[in-house]
Length: 499
Image (tube, rainbow, N blue to C red; front, side):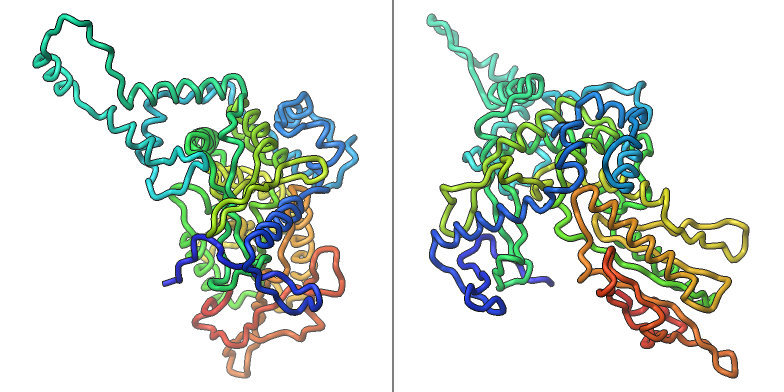
């Protein structure tokens, strides 16, 4: 079992100013808060400078993408060739065109029963609400709505008549009805309540027991009622609409109900078996993104959400609230008084891990990215051994972790595969950079399947010479992506031990 991560930081490791190879431990409260606030200020603005965050797209789309140009992109009528942006950006914009939805309602209204269901199904152990209006309060109020009509009738029959008029009774249901009205008013009039502007950043150690400032995962604790809205318009809104109408790419296996990582692992094992049985020359490529959720930007996200029919009122409120929110640091000693906030000098991006719609936003954005990739990538069409059918070996994704296998049944050398593989890597990196992110080369790798036969015809996997198979990082000629060895794997179990 993986050890549990401490809930709050008690100390912090930062690079030593006198020696960058060493780390200095900070236990002073003020110094720890200052270091975390300064680090987050730089960390969450790394996406700045990507195409959607600077002119011309930033002015043509605005944060909510609800502009005339945004509508043209969704309708597929925008003149993208006239834009002074990269080819990869134009390719991504082209694949953010919306699918036909004229037969579907434009708005996704939150009913009182929907709100009740959301609070009831929400695990009470979830950390919420910097204001103190924790999830448990909403769940307690919801209990009053469970009283049966028979119980209410019984209490009415046994009531004693008095001469004084009885004051009307109010219970948790009445309070929740007021909360429901306030939520709908916020959506209808695009109003951000002051409570919603406060966010606590809780930091979890990626390496247990090593609170290095560069190895922390920032989670966002937001108000429960606002997070409920995000859940309603995200997973229950545009994600459900896209799934019901079968519009999501089948190559994304994460963040979707009914899919899991084991599905992609089984597919990978089956393909490895095919390669082993048929002695096919092939190569498997693993890609990982750097700080995926933290590098997402509002403009590109919103355009992909609208592509799948997101309620425009939700998009407008989300974009407005994101720019108004104040990000305080939460640690073992309390909450910092100082905070970060989005501004022109210090922009703040990211899908905010911990919010109810973060995963859904990445799923629909990855849908646009994957479709754009498949439009120009070199794809291996895996032939079926007993029929004329083929299986398209596109890029398979589980959230931001992706892999693609390239093979060639007509050659015994890797050389014909490598130019196509390098082109695919450059294409994927270009699209990811257009959306605000980037590949993490230290976590990217590739594995060659190159076969050698002895005099008796027995095959075994071999490692080709390094000089003959160099896969470079995108736009880099000096560095290469790590190659996993193939010599330790037998022909009976070609997939065993691969990353």
